[in-house]
Length: 308
Length: 183
Image (cartoon, each protein chain N blue to C red):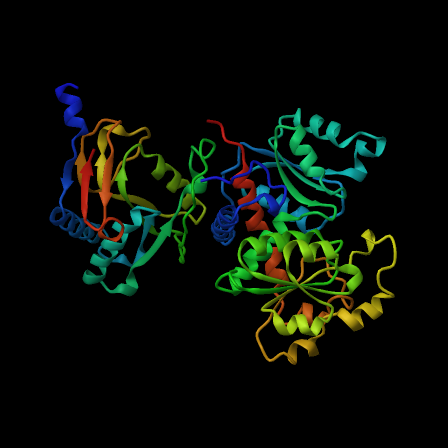
């Protein structure tokens, strides 16, 4: 019973069976998290470092909690408070940490491909916690897990990914995963934020009309506008974005059907998602956060080193 | 191949369908004998293969006692195994929808061999509360292969085996036939 890959660098490298194994293991860990003692000793001999070269609230706390719930020792690293500020390279930093007998690395980095580079050069198992605009595999897994709590199967499920597709690693990981699991995907948003190559490479549907996407889908995964990654203006203003592409309560009420609203956080309230939608009955945003811990426990457990 | 190894390779029947059914009936009665009032007793089947036995025993208990008195849960100990670093095993569902605090817990598993699964189960149970007492019920007790000081309170059949031998418990549900064989 093991994954076909020694690292979790992206959903791209996983098989359908890998994804199913991760999701079914996560289900068992979710049960662990409901117990009076929400902890198992599976990784009590393992030390994990959380290397965050980019800001994070949810992912970082979720990984840290997952490690603690598995009984692992965890180390936290923030680039701003480290010797990276003095010019130490990524590889030097990681090698120095590993020489202190650390077994696994959770890495978030603003450069796409940073975890892939590390995987080539260090012996430890690496979990990608988001690399630039490439992938965020644990987010896609927890999104799939949350969808499966609402829907029987991903096979044939209609999922619309709405918003800033271009700068979103969440979008790319989700598209890979949903594609492998047989779901149908549509991307929606302003033309400037939907890169042609993604649409062409995956043969997915595309629309520039949010209402059309909502009408079509069973699940809408709304993404954050990532202003920090946009070095040129790609739409005129946040206010205008909200008017044209923001999800409002009235739009959902007009649909006359069940719909699930998801968001990976952090939410720009009143931009891509209005508050009454984010906090409304369709939203499973906080379930996503809860499931994140179980999914990350599954990833860490399945990737943890084995001594034959 | 000498006489003894030839003998070892042969399939030896330990319990036939009829004997198995009788043993299960007896185990259910023995449990009731010691726990006349099931009010304060809970039954925990061990995932995955102990469930076949615990299901049958619970079915017997339902015939003898009011069903609402029987608290029945399932426990998977994959995350508590002492060999988790050697091989990652598939985890099954744990479902214990009641408190075990101050209860008499009866763990049910099919074969008691090295005792390592039960050790893990005792660890796991601790995370659900502090039972007042824990007992163990097994269908087959391989008494000479224990690696830990663990014993069973209710036993279907005690057998003497070499470590290298294998005991297969087959059920109608997974194998089409009820029987226990030694290989």
